[in-house]
Image 1: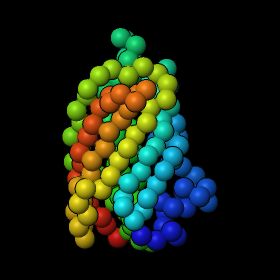
Image 2: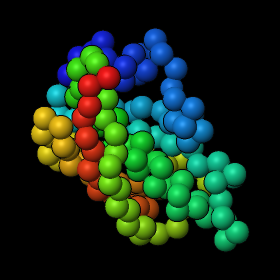
Image 3: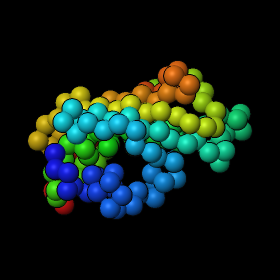
Length: 139
């Protein structure tokens, strides 16, 4: 983990959030780069709703990816990046517009291949959970 990496520069405001994270209303709540864990808040906007009035599953999947990814990014050194190569999502209940909370963690970190896990909550109730595989590459 290097606090001069791209991720930590985004967290400290030296670099802007990526546009996709801005779209999701991303706000970092807690980050532990040593453990590879994060807690993130998202703002599910009315534009994210499907005809039934619930947040469309693709937005929930994007929030989960943007929860687990930073858990791994927080562990990287300068010049490293990580990309999701596999994402598996399970939807547990519908979510309405408003604040959602994501919890993500690195389950297994290899030199290149990593296993990630995360959950998304609305009012302290689980909305969706995911696992992912990511690969670390040099920039």
